Structures are given as structure tokens and as C-alpha cells.
Length: 241
Image 1 (cartoon, rainbow, N blue to C red):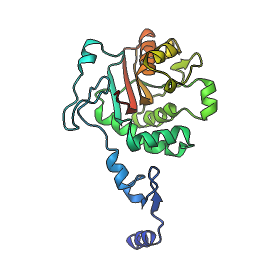
Image 2: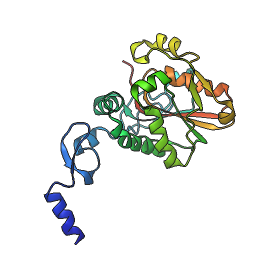
Image 3: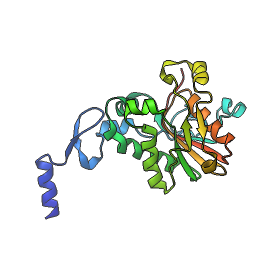
């Protein structure tokens, strides 16, 4: 009876849906994305630096610390990322943030969760999303980092501290600035809640790592507040040309 119903559902199109990236009609049973988009957005598993995410080899090469991080390591311990900020992954993230794509939260959150679980060697005590200033939050309607962190927290059974970091001042969008301008723009833009973060291992969650200026400032702020360890999880890592 069940098989007959499943066959009827397939024949009448009840199991079909549209891929949220390319719009191709596909079977829900294969997942939310069509086979082509699923293949293109496989996670990066090798050939990158586990501290800064710079890609320097093939996917079959083991992760290896780059020369820059050996000489001048970032203010966090490990960076976890799903893939390069390009192609369909970039399109999916942009539509999520700027084209009323809140319905894509589950797809991207699943990517973030699987990425962290497959690459992490420790579970954080707390999870902290990169905060938006209230003005930006009112304009966008939601904080994409908070949504990713919320589902990750449920998966890992760890608390998500929305006030672990607070954006103390409104800043110009980082996308409009160069590297040095980004650093100046974001400097001292965050305040940590010392009572809740001191003595913990914290995982900072964001959607995209571009130059690392924002994440570096977040990590430094948490270090100054007394955290014992900081890791970072992002969906995508932009590669500098």
C-alpha cells in the first residue's frame, strides 16, 4: 500500500519541487537541491589552511597550515567553512540575505552543521553569532548568523549567546570597503559579555569570511574578555586574488 501511494505521488508530481538555486524541477526525495547543484556545492575537504581557509591545492590534498598563519596566526584557533564563496554557493547566500530568502535557512544551516561536525575536533561551550547593529537588523529583518547559530546550537546541544557579543556602534557595510578600510571601520565595534563568555571555548558563527576583518575583531574582543579558546564557522570563504 505504501509503495503504491509513493508511486502515485511521483506520477502526479506531488514529490516534485524546484531547486532553490537554479529552479530546475527535481524530486524532493533527492534533497532540497537538484543533483547538479548538489554536486557543485560539495564541501571542501582538503587543500586549504585550517586556520585561515586559504585554498592552495586540490580537494584531495590534506589541510595544511599556510606560511602566513605560521608567521602571523589569526586570533582564533580553527576556521571551519563549507566551500569557496563563488558559483552557486555564493548565489544561494546572496539570495538568502538580500532577496527575501529566509526560507533557505534550513538548507544553509544543514550545510553549516555538517561542515562543523565533519571537521571539528572539539565541541564549543558556547556559540556566538556575529551580531548586526539594530539599524541593520531592522532593515534586513533577520540576522543570518543568528539563524545559522540557532540550528547549530540545537544540533550540538550547546547554548547560543545572542548577547555574547554586542555591536556597540553602527558601521558602514564592509562590502563597500577595502581591506585596511574594513579594519579601521570595524575596530572596537563589538563589546563582549564577560560574565557569560569568560573561561569558555567559543564558536563564532557567520555566513561569509571575506577579508577576515570582522571575524578578527570579534575573536580579539572575546580573547580580551577571557575566553579560553575561539573557533570560527562560516558557510563560505572568499579567496583573495
